[in-house]
Amino acid sequence: MVRPLDVPRRREGLHLREVDGEAVILDLHGERMHTLNPTAAFIFREIDGKHSAQDIWEAVVSFFDVQPRDAQRDTLSLLAQLHELRIIE
Amino acid sequence: VTASIARPAVGCEASYAAFSFPFEVASPSPEVAAAVDFIYREMRAPRAHGSTPLRIEIRKRNEILELSFDGVTTASGGLGDILHQLDNELTIFLERARPRLYFVHAAVLAEDGRGTLLVGESGAGKSTTSYALAASGMGYLSDEMAAIEPETGRIHPYPRAICLKGDPPPPLRLPPGCLRTEWTVHVSPAALSAPIVKEPVSLDRALFVRYSPANRQPALRPLSRAEAAARLYQGALNQLVHPGLGLDVTLELAARARCFELLSAGIEETVRLIRQPAAP
Image 1 (cartoon, chains in turn purple, blue):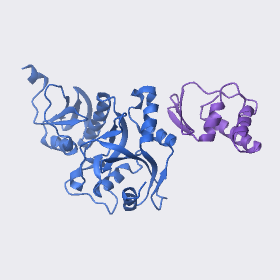
Image 2: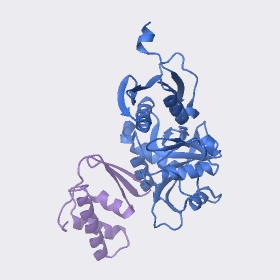
Image 3: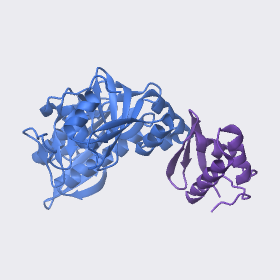
Image 4: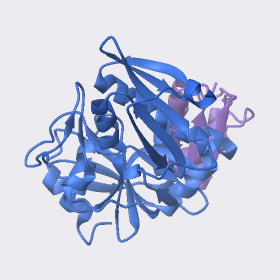
């Protein structure tokens, strides 16, 4: 579970390419490849080890036409997935 | 004398080439040599002069076949085991011999010089679909391996015999003269009347095959470039030898091709969907 004040960081060993607003992440350690849609790619760009989960969903609110409650729910959900996939820590 | 020591006399020997790389296969058993030739016949090439071809020998020892690949004994067993291992060894060898090419585990068919890749994991229906497409008259380049030039997107042919795990589903039928082993059925593309394409074609479409018995109608679902690149990367065989771990070349190839997920269903309907003039 990711909490609002948690500061997520990308794990090492990830190789990222962005294309047409989407992202491709190669995880050499996990030997897996992931794709992120434009919204998820935006959130992933905000994960820099400095901004909290709350900072990130607030950035989502300012960039996308979305209600804060939806942005919070979707951001926390994505962060939890990325954590489970060991893409962030 | 040295040559005769290094190369013991063998009964049958034939020369082939894949991606301009020569290889020779020799066996004292005419049956084994004929089986190998059945599979690689479309790659026959004049004996190489001035270069050392890859040397493959298949010997019989106490009724067990033994594969010697480039001087190293790598497998023993029945004909099916040996042919399977030979194919695996050859694939790996060619990837190393031609590292500039981007290899994908895929079938390749073509029409009017435009190539269609069929990419799919084992069991996805890639071989059956490529068999059906070849039987429908689409040009045949490979049922196993696509070797793509990263700079141009040209796909080189690897026209070995089509390898099926069993009889194809009706209404498809096997033509006469197939090669059956313990594990597989090999069909000469010539026996299907498929045009055998021996020149490179341009990469036009990449279809990522997914079969589900629940699919009632086949469908082509467009893929984004990122999604297509991720799938292509997963099907690639030598992506890591390319710069940037092969990510950039994969994205470039995904951008060159029209990419779809092929939800295959009945084989006739699937072939019709892929080949229809208005197909995406």
